[in-house]
Length: 167
Image 1 (tube, rainbow, N blue to C red):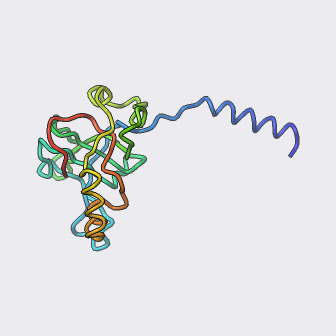
Image 2 (cartoon, rainbow, N blue to C red):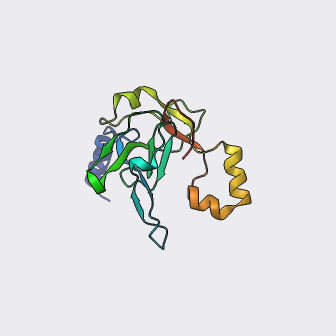
Image 3 (cartoon, one colour):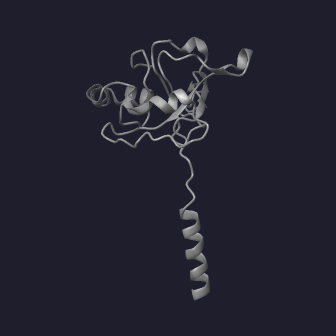
């Protein structure tokens, strides 16, 4: 490689190194659930208001609006929707699995994050506790896969709500 080309590539790498791409944690997204009419089990349909219990967290795996394919609605928060009539969908915010001991795992850098989410986002259990999740995986692997896919952790970046973990 010529010295000029190497210098050009190194300069480009240094310039791009200063460009931070915001993570989408906290960004608004549409909640989805498995399509019961899809025989492959891979299809999804929008979550509607009738699927939501006000005082329960709702976690959605397979949300294409999010890098990590995880969208969350916090228990006890105002129901936000998108669309009309038959095409109405409940909205949440992008999340990801996290480590309870990390103080930066759920840092919000996305500019479109709602202020209430930004102010209260942290790492907390959303599904079950780790023991219950491990027990289900060991005793009923097919049901575990159906419910949680390849997820191994009960902890996700989530705003603190008023309800209980669930859905």
